[in-house]
Amino acid sequence: MSIDQPKPTLDELIEQIGESGARICEIDASEAGAGNISVYMGWEVEVRRHFPNAEEITLPVPAPALAGGTLLVTGSGRRLRQIHEEPLAAIGAVKVHADGVTGTLYTANVRRFAKLTSEFNSHLAVHQDQVERRGVDFQAVVHAQPPHLTYLSHVPAYQTTEAMNRAILRWEPETIVSLSQGIAVLPFCIPGSEKMSNENVAGLRDFEITLWSKHGTMSRSDISVYRAVDRVEYAETGAKYEFMDLQAGGKAEGLSASEIRGVAETFSIDSPWLQ
Image 1: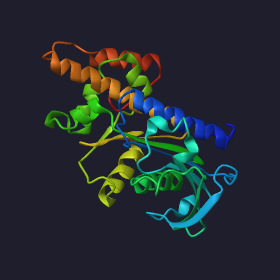
Image 2: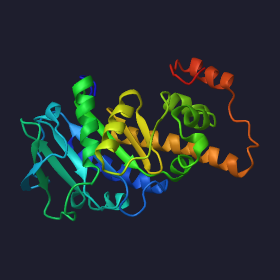
Image 3: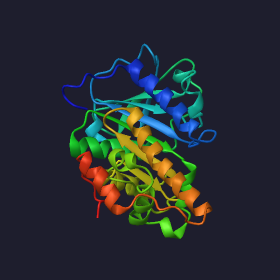
Image 4: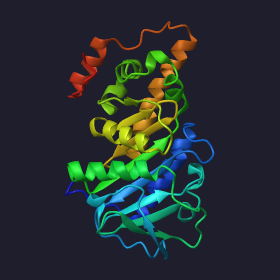
């Protein structure tokens, strides 16, 4: 977040999480308790008014760069579509201790989850890596399970980063503008595993959204939770067009390489996918 950009309030971020969770569900990218959201704030935040109950926890991965910061994290099994109705029941706040390996989990009296999302390790590792490498003081991370992207990741012809980007960037002029760096395709990994976390951290260094093959996506933004969700929506829309074209027998042209380059030049977009 820019040094000149006003810091969002805790209430604003809770509202963003709720609205973003609802939008993820509106595009069918989260069934039941699937999907999760986290936000890192690198400034002093008073959380006790919203989350009065405190317990000490060990972080799933070390996060020394986050020491003194606060994370908002959705709880395991909570439905993203319901967060906006009763957000304090589905969200916990974690203050990271100076040692970077422990923290205090603050929760509300209406808490309805036993523990934070099972993919907290992947979220935390991304926050740690981005803060350590780039010095950001704000970041939103969203995991979703968009069906068309996930389906394409089951098809061998789309299982590389090159093939996936060539496919999904060719359907709408807006896509090269809003998703200029494209999407990183990761191999299938067991959900919540250390390998999944490591692959995801590496992918999100060069890209702002990763596709966990045969599973879903993770996107990040140091602007807002909304922006992280927008990346899912643009990528999923491109995948939906590609899926439609497969169903139609591959009859559509899509945007040509020169047309995509023309859009990029008009909007001063630098992208690795313009060749």
